[in-house]
Length: 410
Image (cartoon, rainbow, N blue to C red; front, side, top):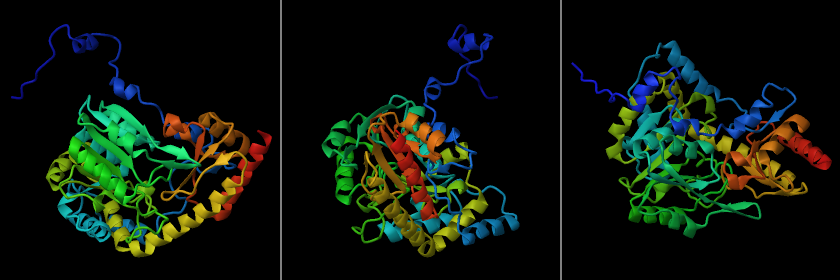
């Protein structure tokens, strides 16, 4: 018989169970801020007159060959559970894909997840205890910092600094913030929302410092293929995997969402030291059990056709960036620099310090949907994020005209 240990009489648990007031949720959860992006989007969703650029996804559908793979899988009746770590053939395909970009990445270091955000949460669950110190480079997609807070971490943020619209890292400040008391560093490069991207030299310096302090690095590299510079031989952004050893305290998160146009599929993967993989499988079991088989089959086909899909996606996004940025730079009071990676133009709007209020006004008064900078960090108040992943370049120009007209009145 299983022994159940109950709280002593008179404990807070006992009092709650005998109270008419329902028990509260964990304070860390109740204290989480709601998404400021959703706050703005909710004000305009469903309005056909609004040009929406607030979410981080392309408006282009997943390629036919990938969708057909999922359809074929479902037609074969592949609607059952798979291995916690993912289909062996998908793990091998991911291993081959990553190895081609960054040198050998063994299949024993790969776990398939139900999306990139699930991969990030799994890493947080695996490595963070309540009370641990976590350092994050901000501004950043709010889910990354929120996950650490959900786990009860003490969060320290090191801010990038804007110089003429280009956000830059103060390496000395980051290294000073990471001490032997720091359990984890969270870094997203290429960065959402700023487009800031670490160099290989900077990654090596950060990793070397974290080795001395015993700090884990959680690297969100989902935008690595959406890179517009020519300073890497493999055509993607620098990765911590390029400078790390297989057993380094490093977890790298990836997703099929961005470079394969698969945001709604919820499919991603983790790269980690091989010693972690079996234990990560246990966590996956207790979270989602596994990614759906037909989604994984679509992922296999996406990787098999990456040479056809991803370069086209990147070339189009670069055209989107190069269309939008000059138009925004020509507007009075706008400050920005072209993003090195990612799918966003992040710009400061002089004279409009409250980005949430500004974004809501743009929705209601101009029919333009942008994400407020405050969603990503307090220091980004006054900034706005524009997702330029639009299959119609003319739509970007129309959006700029709406912003221009609104600025003329305000």
